[in-house]
Image (cartoon, rainbow, N blue to C red; front, side):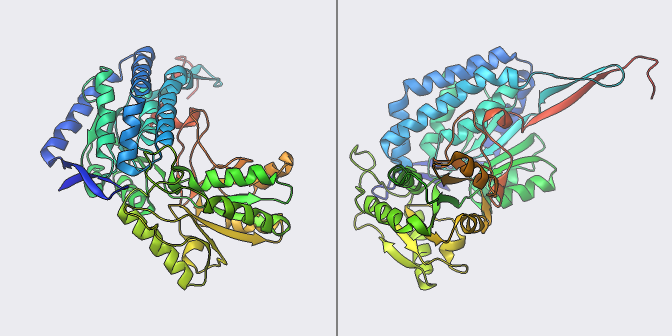
Length: 460
């Protein structure tokens, strides 16, 4: 089976790679295991030096790396360059702070003395998505390499050139062979690989289906797993919101990365008092977005990642309309070649309608009007997902109170859900479990080993 780069702007195949054989994969797992036996003995400073080298290489090659992102999955070029900067920041962040995060914790037992020491656990398997080809890898690989683990990475099949480029960065940084290894394999092969005794933990960012498959195998073989899955983030607009700035952030929150973020603002919930004003301005801005080639600096909305993704999103819109939803804007595939979808707004959404329940991964916004703050909270929580969300209000204490009642892993006040190296990232419910980034992200795949010293005459 071949793995392909297909440019979503034209739907034309650019380059193909052959899937690795079982024999090749086995040899790479063996090298990762061998690398671990040595890497776990290195100092934090040695590990930090390597991460800094990778970060520097990323920044030096930013233009080249960003163009590959845009070519393979359609991200606007300026946003792709921003992703490279963010990814480099994550490598530097863990290089700078990892030793502090992993320092021994001194306990105070009744007798003797004790510490908790964070130790690496071994070879880890990462299964990563296409929507942020470098960032998703950075937030998994950087902290765990700093811990002393080694990495096997199965990337999304539609971004093979990005996958290969990341491995090359580690090679150019003179990482030991086997420390970071790219695997050109299918998702099914990755699930089977979880059973390999040499692999000690798994992290997946992707769909619920993929997460369930990986979690099933990890559970069967008693292995730690971290899952970051789908999201249906709310964007609540209260009556005292600064409307001009709120609408600006609404456009960014929904349309960033061509609408293909797990934490994109997807459900816009406005209280009655300002609903008409918000939707009028929001619709006007979306209707004026320039759809086109993501390599063009003037383009504001590029293609979806693939023709398959565009077909799926258009089908979700059609099913929703058939079930009673109304189209306020757009609703169709854009009239041009490539995997494009018009900027779209759906209204009149109720339980039982596809768009009410499903994640819409692309430039489609769902709009709801509610009576008041409590109704907004209730609607926000009526979802199987619990990744992120936003609350817009000029009363910050009110925003905090609302945020506290929203059942998600993250809530941002006066900003769409977003990410940075020093903030924890993760969700609840069907959005997964575990945390990445910040100090929490380095604590997932460690052995928190108790080392206890007792006096010979201490009681039993």
